[in-house]
Structures are given as structure tokens and as C-alpha cells.
Length: 389
Image (cartoon, rainbow, N blue to C red; front, side, top):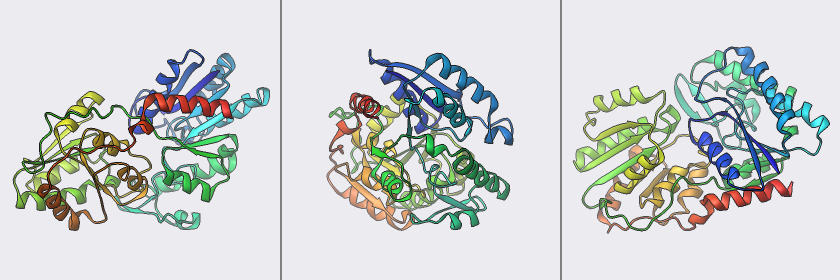
């Protein structure tokens, strides 16, 4: 079986990690031939608005690869940032001569459902959640990009072009949903065939945490993810300020990069909590693991409906108590661990929840069924899905 794995970028965030892991795991199987196709090594913008809608070079390169490699399955992760809907035009053209071709799509966000991939609207740079029962009319009346009305308008046009002119959904045989939350939205809003398959973890629970700090000694929080407005870090830092006034043995490690990084550093100084907060930037898996092994609380204060944030499972696998927003896929992943708190308002609830954690005897957290996120389990299920379609 020949599989072509496609994504906008080679490196970047969670979707890129799953893209790389998918291709690497498939390469280990002696019965699968694998090729990868991506637009850029790192995150970058299209060269023009036209290329955002239709990238001629990408289409040409993809058609050349398809004709030479002749895949049985194409597995797409993301396409709409850089590759553009033109990849589906290339796939459709190839499919006319090879109707047996099947296309699998992993839904890392909500782009197939609406123009706002994160189910967010904006006033200025401030993000607001779109209701789960949204209508497209509501969305098209809203500003869907923090950069301004023009970018929002282009984003809406791009989605209309992709869904109603190119008709990308017609080329997809199966949608892989990494969460039940995402799967339920697809079942309600599309006729696409879906299946739930959890994303694979970068590392696993080992059981011994000799370097783990007890919560009665220090509260050591970790945030792992992109530093952007919808991740809720502004509100969390204000809540964290309240903690530092009550107890000096509280610390926050922020792991990740993003457009909000400098603003968050400035905010920490303004709140006079910079001595308690450390920004590490982007770290590789082993470095993230080392910090999670030491710290005792994993926080995910997102304002948006996170789909399947693996930081929750990885944090719990390293013994961290989970504190996450009571939204989207965060709920089901938190409930897959032994110790979790789902929070509606961080500024009102963080202090009380943290005191509960401090006053309880600390026992490292666990993931109840870590095998659901095992790489070999993911690879085996993926190959079975390819064969089933």
C-alpha cells in the first residue's frame, strides 16, 4: 500500500507534530510505502492573496508527485494556510484516471465546518467564542480574524471558494476526529464519514517521579502551547497574580512561542509577577518532559473549543494534576485522568482550586487508559482504516 501524507508545514504546532509522527510511524511498516508533501519547513504566509486561494506551484508539484508515486491513499492534515484548495483540484484530476484512490483527512480544527478554524470571532484583538450551535449567517456577520475586517473578509471568501467552488469535501472519503467533541460536530453538520482516533503521544507515563515537587511545598504550574490570544493566558496571569499575593511558593513555566509572547512578558512585569513566571520559548519533547517531570500542575486556560490538546494527557502522564477550561475537547481529555479540575472562570476560581490542591496529600496523576494514545496503537488503527476504505 502506498500512502501520501500532506500538510501545510513540516514543523510548527500540534498538527505538524501529528503529521510528522504519522509519516514516521508509517515508514516503520514494511507493507507501507510513504511519501510526504508539505508547503514549507516552517510557518510562513502565502506569497500573495491569489496564492492563498490557488497556489499554482503547489498544484504542479503535487500533480508531478502523484503521477510518479501513484498512491493508494492520501492522508491530509492541513492545507488551507499555504497549500491552498488547489491540492484538491490536483487530487480530483489524478482521481479521474485512478478512481480507486481514497482520501483521508484528519480534522485538527474546525475549518471544514466554517470559516473560523478555531470557532472564534473578534472585537479588536479580543477573542470571543462562537456558540456550538452557530449558524453560518452568524459567522458571516462577525469578524473572524484578529488582524482586522479585511483579513476577515478574505478568510470568508477563501472558505466559500474551498467549500462551494472547489468543493473540497467531495474528495474526502473519511474524516479522522481526534476527539468525540469534534466527531459530534461533524456528525451534526456534515454527511462525511467520520471515525474517532486519538492523536499519538510524544512520551508516556513511567511511574516514578523522584524529582516531582509536592504541592504542599510548592505549586509549580506548566503551560504548554501556542502563545496566542485565544489561549486565555492574559486572564490566567491576572488570576496567577492573586496566587502570588497569598503565597510566594508558586511558579509558572510557559513553554511555547506565538504572537502574544512579548505582550505576555510585558504583562508579567506590569503585574509584578515576572519573578514567578519563566518563558522558555519552544522546547523539544525531551525538554518539555523534563519540566513536566518536575512540576505538579498542568494548566490549559484556553478561551476556545480546543479539539484534542495532548498537553493535558502528556502533563497527566508525567504526574501533573490537570486544570483546564470547561470547554470542547478539553473536558473529555481531562476526564481521562485521575485528578482534574474543569474551570469556568480562572480569575474567580484559580485561587480556591489551588488551595484545595495544596491542602491535599499529593499523589502523582495518571492517565486511565494511556494505550489509547500509544504510537503503535495509532499506527495499527490507521493502517486498518486505510485498508477498510
